[in-house]
Image (cartoon, rainbow, N blue to C red; front, top):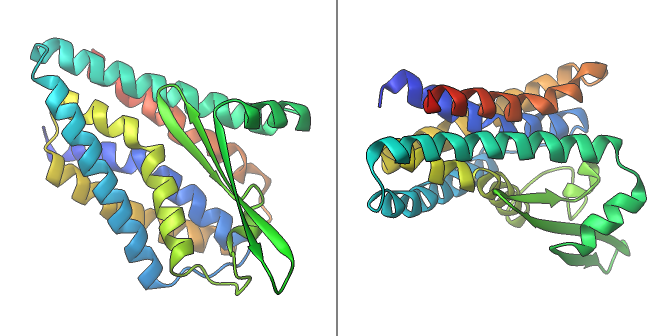
Amino acid sequence: MGIISLLAFACTVSLDGLSAGMTYGIRRIYVPLRSILIIVFCSGTAMFLSMQIGRELSFFISPGIAQAAGGLLIVLIGIWSIYQIYRQQMGTGKEEDEGTRNSCYVIQISDSHLEQKSVLRLNIKPFGLIIEILRQPAKADINHSGTITGTEAFLLGLALSLDAFGAGIGAALIGYTPWLTAFCIGLTNGILLLTGLRLGARYRDICWLNRANYLPGMLLILYGLIKIW
């Protein structure tokens, strides 16, 4: 696979990092370099593991079918991503409660000093594992220090990694090299996270930022269709 195609895929999958960075930038939550490196490592490792699964699957089907299946999987992930964002923005609180009961694990982390609770919600859905870390992004800073460090960085990296897990399987079916793809995903995730932090801090009052959440899903659909045809 060409390097340009690989970089395009890496940027498309890593756009969630841009969105996360903008969220933290808007709320002035600081993400130091050490935390960014943790996120980069988590993203690259998860992508490598998911591509190993896809590579094993590719041994049982022909190259043509494997590429079409990989492209279709990426399209479905893009569609599901858009649907989730739409439901989150347009749905009511009742719908969110129903979603919590459907394939959802809830972990509550309490702070004995501040007597506040932060919530880590994992929603397991078809064609992707979607993680919502702390429904209110301002509470993502578990210890309320204004900085994402240690465990908080690991949780964020895990969320960004698992969100693209299915795309990694599709990428392996298409024919990408696992180690090179994992490296590119980790690198672009870190770069886009940094970019998002700067954009969020600078343009926090611009209303179109919410609509930009649809961009990763739309690009995944476009990329998958290109690979199918």
